[in-house]
Length: 297
Image (cartoon, rainbow, N blue to C red; front, side, top):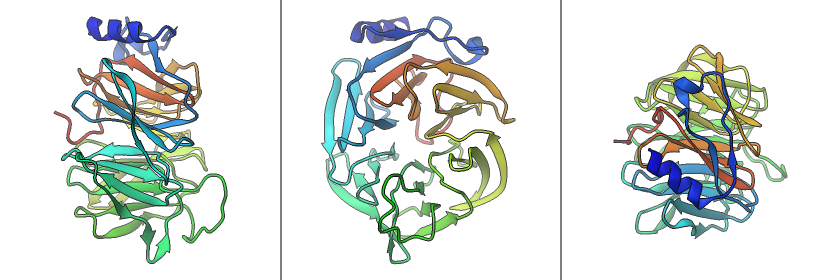
């Protein structure tokens, strides 16, 4: 762990102190928020590939970047339809939300690209924003719209489920104002959806493929992205990283130099929180692992 922190510290020059009430429970006491890279336009969608590489989006530049502790930042893919939320499945395929392209696309480990979903009931999607893949390979995704509202064909901003095999898509939530971040528990039993349009984040029981029941408040706050740790704590983005327990009580916050957009837990030891925050990519060492990756070893 000390070796990993030293690599981060050598890689960048700017460090920011961590100060939070439950630090000894969640964040490594010797850790600092580390700036890994900067000078982006709007970073989003961090996803750990479980092999040693982090991927994330720079939305305005329509670029997916990769980061490793040895090579730093590299350009992975430039997509005409842009890119937002990212997520790897068990086979190593990278699924990408394309806001401008109005689609979910898949990039195989060999680099082959295909459209998984770009319409519902014969009408174009709005702007897919974030996604989570369940243990069976089904895909939950949110479909709001930011910026221009031209050519909206759906009845509103909804949440969808793509069944395993990528052939069937269902609309599963149609009662939210503007859903954004989505994440589920690694055991496939819980789904969390944030609705910044209503400044609320909810948790649902997953009762079957794309079937949700028993909505409860997970945080009395909206968010951009979401992450879940192995203790069931929910991570909410904002000017600081806010952490809520399973009782929807805020138990900690991590001060940040920029407003966070999204985050994911990964790293060589599985305990690094990677944060995309506007122009920068940051990390902080945790004492917990991801609670949202069904395929993590």
